Length: 202
Image 1 (cartoon, rainbow, N blue to C red):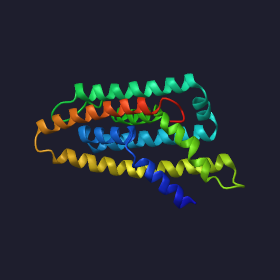
Image 2: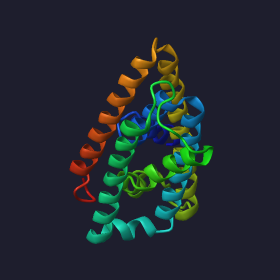
Image 3: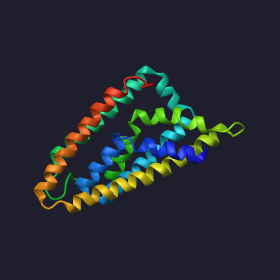
């Protein structure tokens, strides 16, 4: 049962989405260190949302149309803000400015917390793997930590591969062009999220 759950987690994480796009963009434009700090922020967000789901808080959001729409549009707006910031604030050699290590961590955390599909995952997938007789909350917490660990491993691999692309760029102009292409890609991800999260069941 655990093996099936891990396979499901891997399949979900390999589906393109805000986390994957943002981590790749940040790593290409700002380097491996910033990407890894963002991975830590995303992991914190995954655990936070998972614990909220285990305790029932995420269910309140998905059952309230107003709360769901607020989360949805805040997440879309934040992704669009990041795309604009990447487009505007980078320099050809170093990519967008990261004020501190904490900034990269917070970006990863907020990007993940404002992704409504994360709440849907925790409310729909882990409960299917809770065995009869297991304490539900403890089982969901364990499944949350297992998912976060699996996702973090995949995210770290994305960062390593994306930062490698950055080092392979032959010129500062190439980095600049790639940075702007990534900004456009992140904007498209924001539009995709707005379209696919119209209702909690989507």
